[in-house]
Length: 266
Image (cartoon, rainbow, N blue to C red):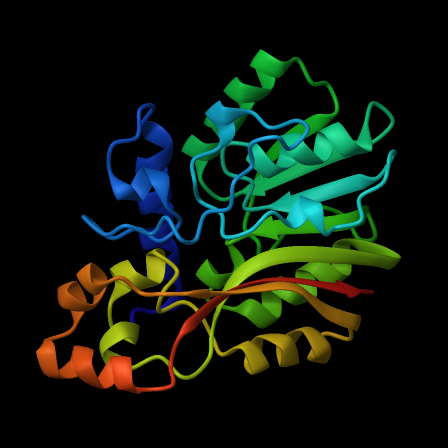
């Protein structure tokens, strides 16, 4: 597996390509995990009908709807990590109202530009997008009432640092709600060695127990999984990265992927 800086570069380049495309025709623009000619539609949840939903901001990069379970209130300050084109930020803005504020953080310049374009169409003056790294969030301590994230932390090489940063920016007693991809066992080395799969969130997933332990070790309390959904890896993906024997062994193993939405309090 590549080192952390190389992985970040790969992720950044891939998501810059996604942001640059207006009309999506490839799976990379429609589904969170990007692998050419692979359908990942079972990851994406339907935002249609959510207040504040803007189709232009929905690049199909999520694996849940964290705003549904985040307990966001009117007047809250919400920070959206990996805000992309602004989809979850705009949904959150509809909840916090004019008295609240939403700050989106993304490490890809192209995504920030796309989000700002969408914001200008909506005319919001209480939504802000900042270029930044989730492992070093460019915000002061104790600023957020709620932190949300949608299928992004699995892309972060140092998840402990990411959750420590979430803890730092939350107000005392505040909470986060993130949707993410976890595994139900250790991914095979064949999967882990693929940087493209990492950028697509497959080999970047860690076991659910390890994921929750990181949250606990960061001193978060009242950890709760709000939703959990099994993700079936399509045969196209297995054929792309595994030979016939490896694919058969993988299917027989206990390893799998789940989309979870989890909350916890500072």
